[in-house]
Length: 112
Image (cartoon, rainbow, N blue to C red; front, side, top):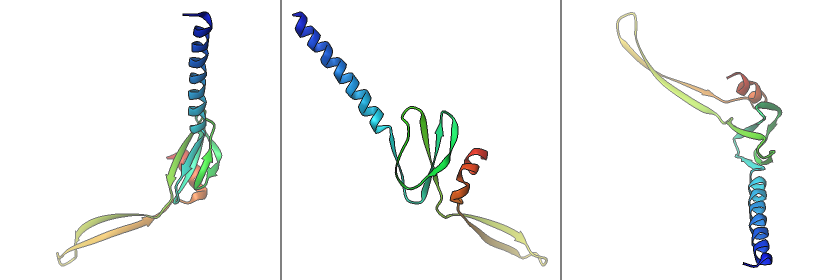
């Protein structure tokens, strides 16, 4: 092989590797929060103080980690049986509706 041909091949390979690294860095910089969710960002293991709203958000690639938390209303149901004073069996279904307060998401994530 000629030196100029080999040099061109090495340059082409190097350029391709740099392009792939830049593409991965660019695509790793954005994340999407769906409606009914909020995002919390951890930078090098420490929680950031701002809450990310639904939509496309930016993060530092390789440094930040995005955590999505669902804040929609949820329902938990449970069945319970007990006896009354006259020994009649009473069956009841208990339902609890709850949601996470968006202003307390960071506190919730850091303590739970």
